[in-house]
Length: 347
Image (tube, rainbow, N blue to C red; front, side):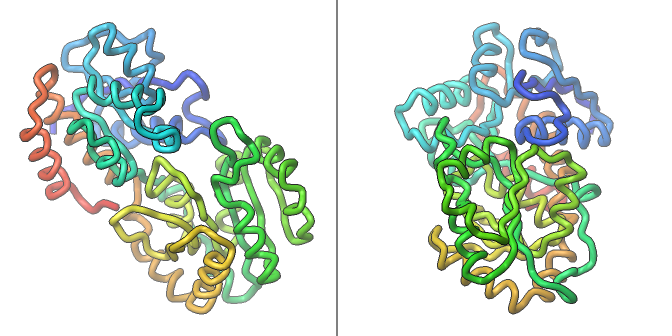
């Protein structure tokens, strides 16, 4: 494949690479890292630094930045990362803004398969999985064989400006830990402190540890390695799988949580309903078969690496970008199918 020139448009909110929180920024950084390993040239620029350039691919990640490109006549690729589009629903300002960004793109990606059908008003939206840095998020030996189990939740809770909204299911995880008399660590930004201020009863569990200092990447890796089960009973995500779920999988940390994707993730016990009892039963089943689950995760962990995602992304950049101003629905769809059949392993 010939070398490409790609411009990833920065969000303008968090530095890239982020050392701590910043999911979209982490995705942009991963794209740059893996695409450059493949020999492509990738720049990260603010939207006001982007100009129309022949044979350059502009990839935007925020709807208003995509629409800024559209208004200036800059062809762009768009990635949908906004869970608020689903939360506020069809016809909302957020949904309409993202829909306009998708329609104005050459091609757009969603990282949750069900959102392709959700945005049924357009045929330009395609699924592209998230990935993980499997070289960084590595497992330690199966620590549960010789010690007590410990639970981990890693998330920035809240929704639509309401820090007390339990989007990530902290209550269910903590109540399950209490029922099973297991230690649990809840990790995230200082915004989580506002969540616990709104739910003071949860802080009464003596085996709860709260880490709300926006941990660095190295601190996060050690947290994955030092716990034995990851809890993810989230009720709303724009990524299926999202980044933390794949980080846990790469760390061989068995998971109990929600997931809507069609591709199997080894070691993930999917809860059917989001409640405390479902989380409890998932933890019990995971503990009962822990060694087999851990071993199955270890065998496939490298399949989740960002490199496999970047290979598909580069395919789209090279071939789908050719449609440019004339979007050919059938041609684009056939190329999409071809990309998934010809590129290596994928999640």
